[in-house]
Length: 280
Image (cartoon, rainbow, N blue to C red):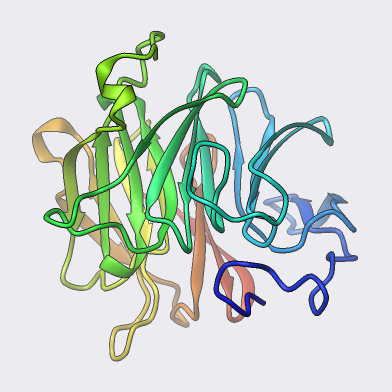
């Protein structure tokens, strides 16, 4: 798909003709709405904000999109132009928005090693990265906000860890202060586990104060799910591991129902969605 590792081959791989965005009834599994045909090339990350706007990334187009009632209302990045500046991405993997809608965070990506922050209108604010001493991110693949703790957490896929950056999410003033000008950001916490060799997706549960994660298969390690505490007094402690009865194939994404009772894992081999009941 990317002959040189960065530029999508549009001559060989065209736009996806089928509908790519599906709304599914979680009780019956029936598709109740679908759209997005002839629109995307390689859609990847998907998020819904507090106002039910839909956000997604397209790694082929190197862009991030916001949809409201099926209409595209905001675009970040330049179509099919990779980069690593304030207005370009390189295969962005995921996106998340603060509860008040004022802040946008993009995990960037398969060929960049950073998190990029924007205001609600898409204006660049700052970026997060890690120094050589800290071990740079290797494919930041999934991103969540823990707003109660002012944390931006990312699944550092190939390093097999979850990295949480300190950010003033609840501060309305993202002005051009010294911190933003220098694009500095502080690593607040790192969560890892011997069985978590890779981390493909993470999701935060604000009700139970937990962080869910799914790992991928790596050599002799099988894919599995992890539940970590994010209570301040027990932050990063493993609560439990989990997996379906027939084991995971290749889990790639993770989502939690609004009421916190159901956990969903999207797999790409086989192409299916696994549903789990969340226990107290």
